[in-house]
Amino acid sequence: MAALSGIMVRVRSQLGMWRFPGTDPDLPLSTLMERIAAEHQVPVHQQSVSRDPRGQEVLDPAAPLTSAGVCLDGDLLHLRIDKEAKALNGPEAVPTGRMIAA
Image (cartoon, rainbow, N blue to C red; front, side, top):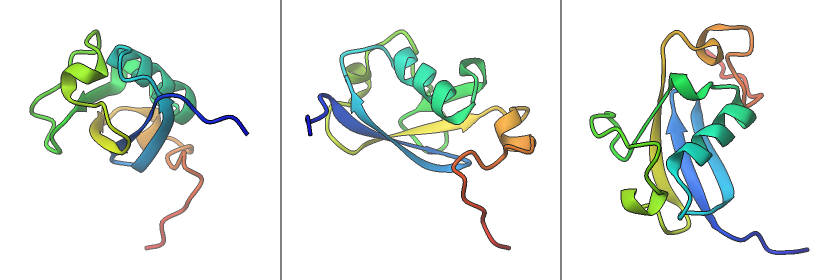
């Protein structure tokens, strides 16, 4: 089995923690945002990514991940999904496939 190149980036959102192995930290954040859109059905225009949990320091999608300090396996980013997003409100509101019991 071939090893993945790149690093494992963790992304925490209102829907839980997602892991993105094989992420190249030299690529722009927008590349990761497009991957989030493809894998978790959250359109890029409904994503706001930051290093802090409160989302007060939103990252520039055009900047490389390294400029945000994301360069090691396990580095964490915080994703705020727009409250109007289908991923939060539609029947596919649990894209991880896990139901959370009340």
